[in-house]
Image (cartoon, rainbow, N blue to C red; front, top):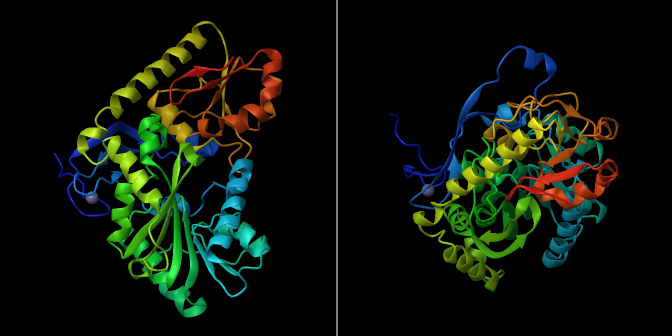
Length: 414
Ligand code: ZN
């Protein structure tokens, strides 16, 4: 037996299991048909553990970030509700910090520039840092200055020398993907002005556990944050959380507002911090015992899904899926689904169409295909976008097709 892995934040040995999903392919490795024909894709252990010392939930890094992010197929701009979320954030933070033409906003993992565009339009200078060259290209074409780089202390030093320190540093939905927290969070600290503000958005572990959102667990998603754990991750690198918001995105996220340790006078702690910490303690997240029931609830959810898929197949009813998102892959593969259960998946993102989902090998088609094929059920894989998707695809009800939402419990909509 190999030694227990070390915590990505504090280095303690990880001995407590949250959920062990066995051996799974990488959730974001969409396959071209010729790759699929070449044989099975590699599988790696997908085992979520809780750190007994700092309470950070994490899976072991199995692939270098270069393999995941260098040609990332994820373009944020393909989700309407996501764009609205970004524009709303830009307005709020611009007001709160009084950002203007003399400010600098740095966003790490800036994707296709969808968020920074709002600042550019408001006349606030920006810099994006994005490791995927193909995605960064889209941002630059849209007028968003972007460095193609992995962010860390070295790149922070380069920014400081060339552009100076930032008034606002944004790290949305990236912290969970970072294997070297020391270097990455250290870089966030370094690039910040002494009284500057860092905002970080991460899916909230409390919501994941309460909503049985186990499908947000995949290899590229290394860490799963409670406020208790996130506060510790930042504090170890000289940053303090002074405010927190609970957001509906990704099934329930936290937006942390942080400053350097010495800036408490400029940014006093709000009551929201104590309120969220209290809610986490009430749910038992300050103690390893509070994490124990999750795996059993996941087992029940998977059994229900399996029963539904088997039932549909036995009665000759056709199931298609909507949304080729990473979380769908965890769900399908944990349930052992194949094209015998779900004929195909449709997705609006043209970069994903024509490829196959890893593991399940479902072909990814354009959403229009549903209208010609007329399946009996449409399984909504990104359940966090269920309102948006059931509205967009409402036409399927014409031929009696029913939406199926798998999380938190399997639900066949009327
Ligand atoms: Zn730890």
